[in-house]
Length: 377
Ligand SMILES: N[C@@H](CCC(=O)N[C@@H](CSS)C(=O)NCC(=O)O)C(=O)O
Image (tube, rainbow, N blue to C red):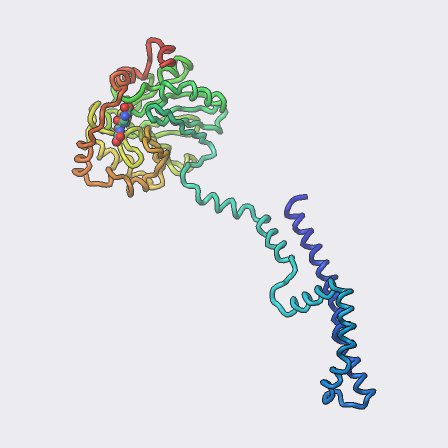
């Protein structure tokens, strides 16, 4: 029996029980109170006394007998006596004393699951929703890199793309793609990375139909080059390409489409341009703090405040932010341009350990002469 029906049935039973009990209570009321009063009046009449003036005298003479009788009755009918008291009390009180009210309130909670679901839903701000989008944020711990998997799950072929895959985690990424029944179409980079080798080359060696993608401005070799304003389509979903130079000269940010059938809120894959509470360094690969400041402010922070920020790295355990959150809390980009340039000129970060291997490899989208060697590294 469904829980709501069960509760309703027990509620009906309780109501019937309390009705029976109140009839018993009426009977006890007659035995305990009405009969003694009649007896008192009869006694007064028989003895030719005015009942009003002789009440105290009369009571004192009959009390021992009647109270003894009442005491015995009470013992015999303890349960009924208690019920009778409850009956009188409930008649006097605006609040019912029987458990019926408890049962009813439980039934109301269980009968309104949608109310509680919608309350829970209104607290969810950390992910974007679309009936089409399948989204996964994947992490590579050596370089603290995020790789993003996006797919149109409503399309018959379930076309998918990867943003910023890492060579070390290609097998993991391809296995989740296979498990979810997706068809990987594009392996994309936000820029030429300096701290790890991109997974795009290795992916192509394992799934030759996949196309590698990078910006034309990067100067790197790939199957497809994107430019500002281009759209990268998978099924009915698309990403817009925005030029965001500054960390490197070819950096781009991929932003989900601005249309009612696209994920809401929008999602921005910012690479190393905008990090959570930080931003990419500007001291190599054609970096420029002046350009970075302009890119972030004109191309990313002008998006709706609800836009989700998904960076290529995080070193502090953050996973996602929003434009609104960064506008308020980012210690670098909330400053004026001069202060920002000063901060960026004094970061004193050591060069990435992999820079001498990573940059040349990534200039050809990670295509290795021996993919098996790369897989083992
Ligand atoms: N220690 C790491 C490199 C860390 C680093 O320099 N990160 C870059 C992005 S990867 S090129 C960066 O821009 N950091 C900004 C910051 O404020 O930390 C290594 O050796 O690989």
